[in-house]
Length: 484
Image (cartoon, rainbow, N blue to C red; front, top):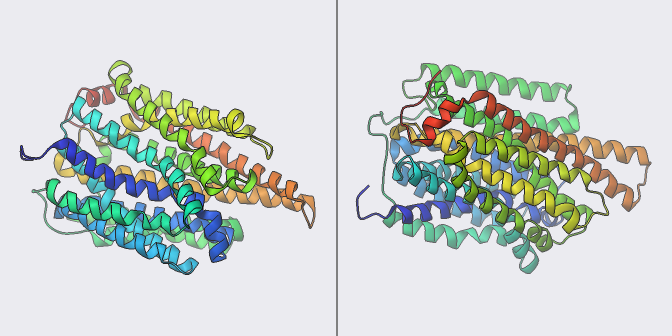
């Protein structure tokens, strides 16, 4: 990078784009009841407004990350901003559920180009050590806090205007980001690689992951042992195995499988996959609880999550101070234990719960814990990697988050819906309003318990897969990866 480019200005611009991407992953949550009513959607199809975005986002992240390495990270970043902004306009103009779900998928594809390129730009702009830790602290606060801000902003837009505005709001942000980034963000790429794309690998891994989540979603209606579900899951396994074979034989693989020999990369990605399964689902179920059980408006539900943003900022700030003292592995372990404990507090909720004594403590504890988690885990996942592989490492880490989020939501939605249906069936043909609310809560409690289990499992995996020496090298700014 030339001396004329201010690295902190670059950070602001790429974080603005990342904020837009992450915000859009959750901004629809508070609008779901309104969208469901306006477009006459079933509960099963409703979650595809969330999953269509997440699946295309996660499915194409690896290709997006590698495309940035090969074609230029700035070029791919700008292309993603354009696609995301255009898709946002189409989402806001949607006249039916199919239109909205398809255009949400296009948004996810745009996000898959933006997010890994943005993180790769950050890691290639800031040197390893204290400077990069500070930059990733800002990045992580944006990445997680943006989800909570999305709930607040979504509530405001739905109540004051209408649900299409949760998509229209991206248009001026996207235009401003494109214009400023075109001028101020420097270009970087992998100059040692051939200019070819692993299309076969991208197709097999994307369709395979989509089939996996779709099979889980269909199990809610067809049952786990049905021929339909088993067939879809079998197709998923075949495609994912084919992806591994293709990567082993490709001259320019989408994912060089040898990167998983780096313990920090392997440990951070596996742990984040499981953590995301709990965190993403928490936003979804808590929003539905506030609106469908407690009767909150979209705005009130959004404001209820405002402390989550504050907790993330507090946790992310503390993590930067604690990493040099406690270690890059120990800080997220503390954070995940806190977050799991906060999630368990939601099990106390009933149809008669109130915000201050019942809901707020869980939000605060969970958010601070996640703030403590994301900075060091992001640092671990992206440090010790050659600059040429910055896009690949960023794509892998973002993929772990998005696919984990989609899988967790699909799986826990299935369990929650099944529990609610069982409770309603036991009440008779015409359950009362209070019985229906109680049935929903019992389904949500299954989901909250699952969220807590996933967060605790993430802590166990982080501890088991990473040695103190691995993360000590990362914290000290070592560039030599630690392999098995």
